[in-house]
Length: 195
Image (cartoon, rainbow, N blue to C red; front, side, top):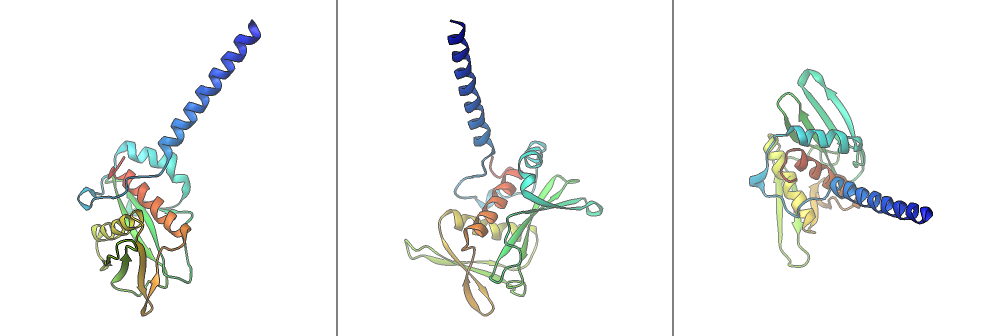
């Protein structure tokens, strides 16, 4: 009888452990809604969103501390870096004194001289086309531009960018898309754009 009771307790503990692990994994996943509305964009971070980022997500980022400017700059470790095709790396800039976070666009050398940066999108199912344009500007201009790209990626649009006098594929490699997507999801969570 004692052996049976021990086996039942072990089965119950295993199921509780599996349930707790499933809950933790669900809480820490970095997915988000399909589309982010521009009216919801903001720069404010909260204590709980900062705590989540520091304790759960920060380990996936390289940290650059700028204490004289009250800033910490986070760049996702899996970013493209210097590659021979057009690419944009993103940095999350956290102003810890103001409890604000910003997105910083860091184009690689292929895109560095492009002003404006023009991204062409097309929906291969419907035939619709358009552009996203970034005239180098303030924090909201950068956030708005990358949010349009994020929404395009989430909606399965094909992207190209104007670089070196011609259109070239953009965020085509799955590694580049995932680094972009994860950075944006982390930013949106940090600023409570979505939970």
